[in-house]
Amino acid sequence: MKKLVAYITTGYPELSFTKDLALSLSEAGVDMLELGIPFSDPVADGPIIEQANLLSLQNGYKSSDLFKVSKEISGAIDTLWMGYFNSFYHHGFENFSQSAKACGVSGFIIPDLPFEEAQPYLTTLDALDIALISFVAPTHTKERIAKIAKDAKKFIYLVAYAGITGSGVDESLDVIIPTIREYSDTPIYLGFGVNEKNAKEKSRDVDGVIVGSAFVKVLLDDALTHMQKITKISETAKHIKESINM
Image (cartoon, rainbow, N blue to C red; front, top):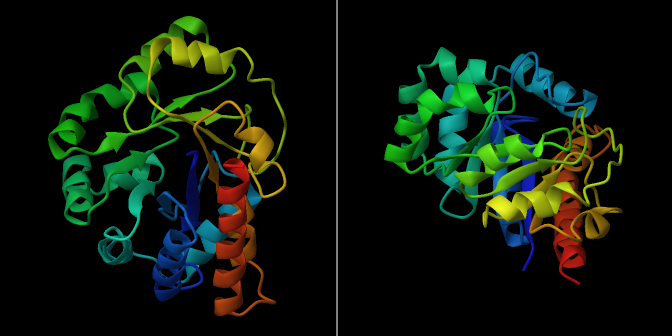
């Protein structure tokens, strides 16, 4: 069965909402949850997720909020932290990783930490059994794919196009997917630009999809109540999970 990974921004519109939404997404069939760590300059994200980041920070987001909600949801849904390296480095990478382990977090997604620069941190993560998710992009050479994919853990994050999240630009993945599979048995999940309309097609040759901007867009809709937002996002997630497995 193909997997669905959902991204939501921690603490927006409020922390209790993040918990309620996470638990609802678990019930809707979401397999893994990326808890986004709010950051002032999310360079890999488009304007939708960037806006949610800034609003969460304006609401007074603190790292203790991330720890609190992670502890409350990780028993119900496989939880990963998605954030930029400054957030991990600022707290001391080892200390932050130990906090993640204590909260039941299973992996980190750090889009601005290049493969080579990540190597010194793997000893810490391996000892805690926390996966650092590897990114592969359509622009990577076969040699680089081999290097990245060889020791990838949990899943390989295949970036659908060179750019930022949510822009929806299509690129051919007919070559890169078989190349990844040549070097690794780790599941491949496709991210960037995946939504309810295109998820089935996007999932065709991979093991799962990652959906972020399509969900966060609903978080930003002030015309909806909190419960309406949770219902709408969860129903969309359920439809996506069903569609990619039809």
